[in-house]
Length: 231
Image 1 (tube, rainbow, N blue to C red):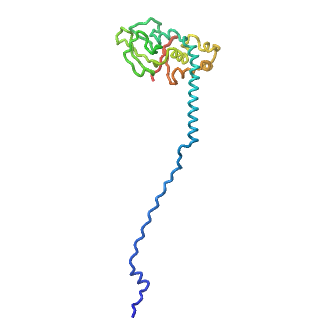
Image 2 (cartoon, one colour):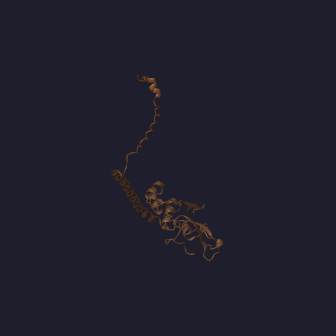
Image 3 (cartoon, rainbow, N blue to C red):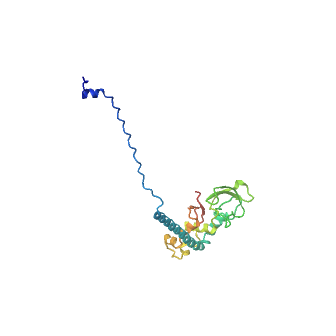
């Protein structure tokens, strides 16, 4: 006699357990990178063109500044009041004017055309680079170090005529002949008109090598001392 056929329920009960389903690994998102920019030929060409135009413009302005400044410097080189000039370059007293007292040094805020200090000046200290606005301590030759005075100095590369011109364009009251007359304008010409005629901004850029050199004046009378401001 054949064995009884197991029912469906019995077959399910006797079947080995199914392995638990393995969880699928989450898909790693693919990084989306921007399209490679590379060296775009047109972009490089435009960049090169802009830089070239900028360089040409700067070179053109520098040449224009030099041309205007050369004429203005020629007009103003001998126009700084003599007493102010002697005080600035030679250390001659201003109040009252002269003579030099070796025991009481005054003035001296600029170098000679050779970039040196005037004759008779003994420097004993310096603060800052000579190529920038800086300070020195000095006294007259043969005098004690205790008599030394500090002086704020224009950069050593500024020729005297450039210093004179910069002072006059900054402080018109330092001039012997009014700037309007030098510029060929009426005596009542506005300062703006004078600045335009003398190309004041271009001249200052050329004189200072396109840097900022602030000036200060000291004195209450008609004659004043002019010197650069230590930054």
